[in-house]
Length: 182
Image (tube, rainbow, N blue to C red; front, side, top):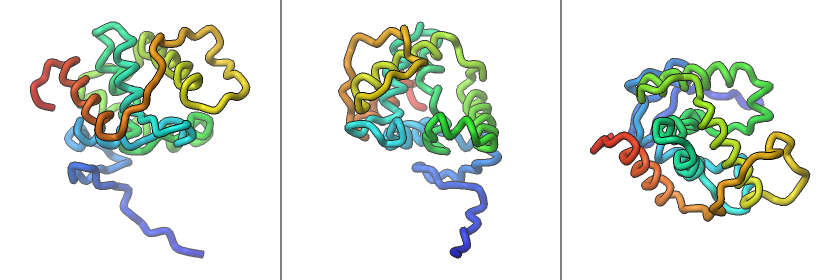
């Protein structure tokens, strides 16, 4: 059996930051890393008809909430920039993963001055996006009970390429925050 190397529990981000997965700090979190990584991460573990990024999902969700919740909606999946997009059914049975995700989410919230508790409007927008994604991007199949009665966003999803998703994510952040540079 092959020995798994000890990588020390850290990764190198796209901006060159040594990111400690088990002990993330505010200083390790950079918007550029989040935008870049999420534009490369495909929703649904890659089981969509075409590549559809978490970055695009986040940008679209941020347009479905009141302006006060738009930043939260844009960043609601930001942990996936550092630890990937584990499919929800598996995430539910791996408590250690949820602990790591919670620590990371806490650091992200401190970095962007967000409350840790997700606003109701963001939960609703995330479900609306899930319903639209199910309709537009996944193979037909049995209905998902959690989507019963959920309103679909009116616009069908037209997946963006990686670079556009990254740029749109950055632009959306700047528009929401009014910041001139991240």
